[in-house]
Image (tube, rainbow, N blue to C red):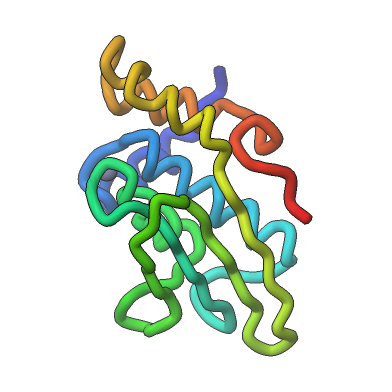
Length: 138
Ligand SMILES: [Zn+2]
């Protein structure tokens, strides 16, 4: 498997460790930007929902990492919820896209971390195609 080592080190430096939910957030944010044809950091905003505890809340850091939407720029909101999702909006056009990870995939993260470790689970998430990680985008 051809792994992007630089990406892994940057995500680790940002979040403090590599885990499946941070990687899932990275993938979700990246997918939203790709589908919207949007650039990161400015001119977009992100609305994140996820449980208010780790590890699922690590999803929000992955979103910040890939979208560049951050607390300090005021272009991200985080709403505690049992549902994990991100909606990215392009400010100019109002174009928006919501990415929802598949519950059955997230249900595997605990077992994956237990049988190996957080980083191995993150690498599994990185290797999965978008269609397996996320619900179809409408
Ligand atoms: Zn984490």
